[in-house]
Length: 391
Image (tube, rainbow, N blue to C red; front, side, top):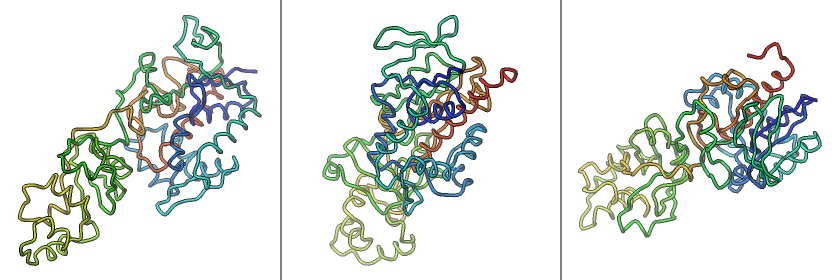
């Protein structure tokens, strides 16, 4: 029986292992953490958004500059297939009002337990606390393990090592020193630093709802949280790629009112009321919206409506990459074949977030990890089965 080795026990690695086991190979998963899929479990704490229920074309459009292998993977294993996969593992799912798909239990652990149990029945071995350190001169995979240094032979190897966000959960990105070419890591789906004035402290931890965020060609109606460090939350994550790359971030604090309606309301006599009270009464702005106007809008212009509809947000750049939901950058696609094999190391494939792609939150991230894991597993199985096709 051929030996397949998978390094990394996140969603991409587990999917790869299942594909290879189904192809009849002996599969070992090696992971340097004491338990598998830690970032997957962390995602489950907010409900585990598995995918987004939408047609494949708009789903693909959420991925900027989509590389051909990624498109191939997602067309073969997109939202419909992810839903079927979860249901096959005994997890009922539902789609929210925005199309985001979650397990009904709103947790990751039951799905992961069922998946690991199914892999065990297929003969997949999981070796924990095995840290991959590269290859020796004979091409054997090297590991530091609790029992000491190990070298393993394999007929095909798949790397699913993750990106560089949330290193305490296992995605350290330190593999980049061993592999190449690698596009530099950058934070993705992250918050932004803001040096607040003292008056903003009263609003830390408070949500901003009912606003529209815009940056470049991206916009969001998601919720934002004012934190001591700056701005966090799903709304800011949806536009973070454009902001990170230099686009101006603006908030429309009254998106359901036209500029004309807002100007008419603010044109009413102010009397002795302060500008802030006038905005609160006439524009019906909440305390957090008013605080932001005072933070970023002073000195107030004559056109308060225009300011309210497009308030420029000053920030000091992204929060650290270790805090980001995901990362951009990673192993470049020009270093890979269409089935995700490293061109300079035949028999070695790569999958998941360690590849150079990015996507917004909303179900795209987990779907892409599963889809690329499946594609890499299929490529590795073909490599083992068809020696004549090897490059």
